Each structure stands twice: as structure tokens, then as C-alpha cells.
Length: 175
Image (cartoon, rainbow, N blue to C red; front, side, top):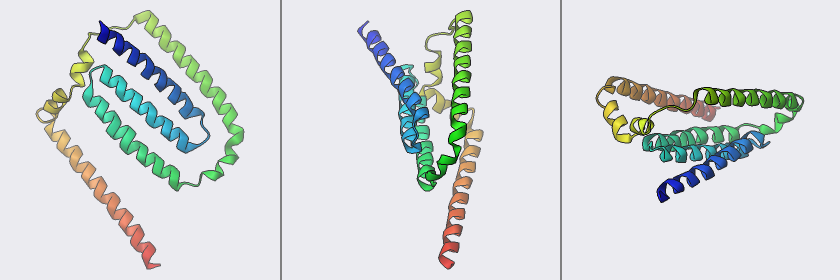
């Protein structure tokens, strides 16, 4: 009983932190601060996956989203000149109003659907899907060919990106 209460307390704290960080992410003027709040939101999502018993999905959330994707976004933010944002100030107020209205409509529809249909499902279904052992055995038995093809495509994309960046730096050195 004590473990169940502890899980609920952690769930409530992490959920509130995820909601607060996602609101802060979309309300910050600095793109870098927004990206950092987005990382916090991804980490909170990973903790929620762990509470559901999906270790593999939690690790993917941390490695892929909080790690690789956010590093890419932060590098792009650092490379861009974000001082030229001032010309979009007139559209931001209308966009924010429309965004709030659309978000409220979607939230009301979601609450209506949950109220009409209820939350159905078996306990432990997601945990058996998100288990690292289950996913690993499926990847290396039934889905071996698509897994290997995806590996080769990612390797080719990485080699192409390195070649393109080398070509640009070599052209810059010649001038």
C-alpha cells in the first residue's frame, strides 16, 4: 500500500512539473530558455514512462529526445541570429489568442471523450509492450530485416552529412 501511495505522489509531482515546464516552454521569449524547459518536459515524460513500467520507452525518451534532438535544436538556436525576431511582434498577439482558443477546444473535446467512453484497458498491457526484453527479442527475431535496413539508412545519412560538412569547410579554406 505504501508503494502505491508513493507512486501516486511521484506521479502527481512529475505531472505538475511537466505541465508547468511545458507552459513555461511556450511562454518564454528566449528560444534557449524554451529549449531548456522542453528538455525538462521530456525528462518528466520519461519519469512517467518509468512509472508505467516502460523502461525502454523511458530510455528512448531521454536518449533520443532530451539528448539528440534537443542538442540539435540548441545548436541551431546558437547558430541563428535571433535578434531579428522583432518584426513579428504584431502577429504574436493574434496567434496567441487563436492558440489558446484551439487548445481549450481540444482539451474540452478530450475531457468529453474521456467522460463518455471512460478509460479502458488492461493493467500491465503497456508495461509488457515497453519492456526492453520484449522489444529486443522482437527486433532481433521478427523485425531483423527492417532493423538492419534502418541501420544502413542512418549510417548512409551520417556519412552524407559528414561529407557535406567536409566539402563546405574545404571550400571555405580554399577562398
